[in-house]
Length: 67
Image (cartoon, rainbow, N blue to C red):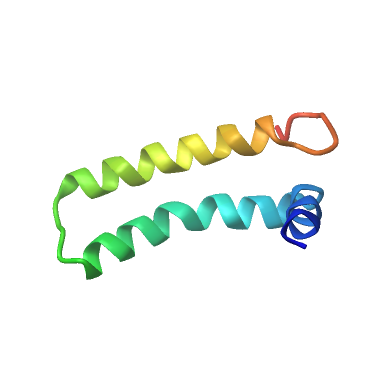
């Protein structure tokens, strides 16, 4: 079942962008609620954003790059 959902998300560019863009936001909010603070949180979020975008391009279902 999870594989079917993942295939559906992979074929929808907007859904992939939503997942990849929410990752850094969730990292910032989650670490903030956990009591962590500082500029390094934003550095981690930027790395997560770039990494998720690269992963999105690599796992594109239709084989073409998103940009």
